[in-house]
Amino acid sequence: MRIVLQRVKSARVDVNSETIAQIGSGLVLLVGIADGDEFDDLKYLAEKCVNLRIFDDENGKMNIAGVDVCAEILAVPQFTLYADTRRGRRPGFARAAHPDLSQPLFDEFVTLLRRSGLKVETGRFGTSMQVHLMNDGPVTIILDSKDHTKSRRK
Image (cartoon, rainbow, N blue to C red; front, side, top):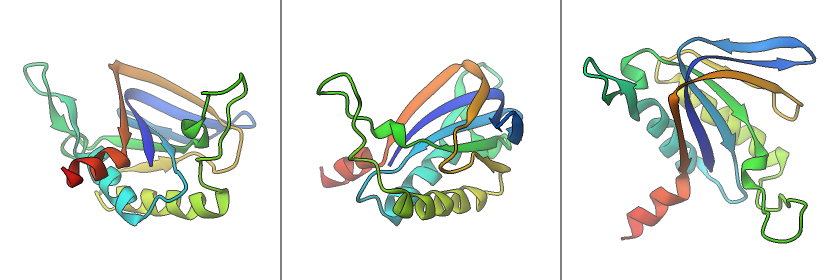
C-alpha cells in the first residue's frame, strides 16, 4: 500500500462539476493499493497517517500529530500510484490491485481512519475526480507499507 500524504489548509473532490467531499485544515491522502496488500498494511498506514507528527507546535516545528489537532482527512483512491514507467512511454498498472480487491481494502482503510475520531471524507472509487487542494508548507510525504515490513525484518 502506498500513500502520498499532503498537509493542507483545505481540499475538495469534484465529480462532474459537483463537490462530493470537502475538508478544512488537515491531510489529503492519495491511496494506492497493490496486489498482495492485506489488513496489516491498512492498519499500519492508517495509524501512521493520524499519528505522524507533521503539524507545527508553538515554535513552528513539526511536532504535533493530526489526531492531536483534530485534522480533517480526505482519502482519495488512486491506483496510478503503482504505475510502472520503466519500459516505454505508456505506464503499466499490473502491480495495482484489481478494483474487486482494492475497493473493499480502501473502504476498510477509511474505517480504520475514522476510528481515530477524526472527520474523514473520501473521493469516489472508480470515478474520474478533480482534486483541489491548498498544500500547507508545502508538506508532502510518501508512505509505503512495505517499508514497515522491511524494517521489521531487520
